[in-house]
Amino acid sequence: MTNKEILEIALQQSAYDCNCAASDFLSEQNIVTISKANTKARRYLPLPLECDLVSYGNNIVAQVSERIKPAVTEYINKFDAYRCFETPQINLLNEFLAPFDLKVCFMAEYFLPDAEKLKELDCGYVLRILNKEEFADLYLEQWSNCLTFNDRERDVLAVGAYDNGKLIGLAGCSADSETMYQIGVDVLPEYRQNGIASAVTSRLALEVLALGKVPFYCAAWSNIKSVRNAVKSGFRPAWVELTARDIVFVNELSRTGDDLR
Image 1 (cartoon, rainbow, N blue to C red):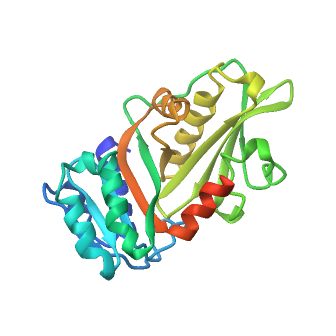
Image 2 (image 1 turned 30 degrees about the vertical axis):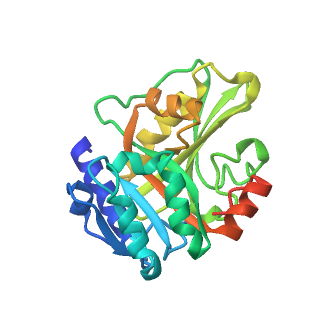
């Protein structure tokens, strides 16, 4: 796949997710749509969403509910697109959302593989490709970032790094849509900073592309280690996303620290 083809697939997937056209993300004008359920959307998205902002760098596509459409439209048209994803502007967005009992919840950056830079990386340890049966017993806390505990059927493939038969690093991918598989990675603490994360991530990305699917990688802006791994593994920034949820949900998430998506 070329970078152009990879981006086109991602744009179409975002269009399914946001109830819009793929070309909307390339417009110089902001787009506001009414959020709707779609069987082709990423499987973990709880559509419809009340407020979800997506930018590929040109503009903002906002999918919203009817009741908050005026507030969100006013907000995204007040500032440059990238400013809407940072403070102090986000504080204003929360003020707009407060009357509807909503609050900003999730903020993340998404990465796509760079076809010109993605390659297999060596970490000095044995790498093995694992199918569903082979990683069925690996739903353990140390691998919680790379396997989907609440929907195991989505997990389709993994790559493990081994030290004399001991699993020390794991990258797994979940079939989050028909065309795009999300990659997550974990490395045992005592083996970190040895190139293992980038080795298993890049190898898995190549395996996903060989299946005719597009691998993607998600990281919080503040998770510098994860962002560095994405870049080292041959990925590059593609889009950013901000999602508001019900205040009760956000407060519970803040209290427990769990990811309740």
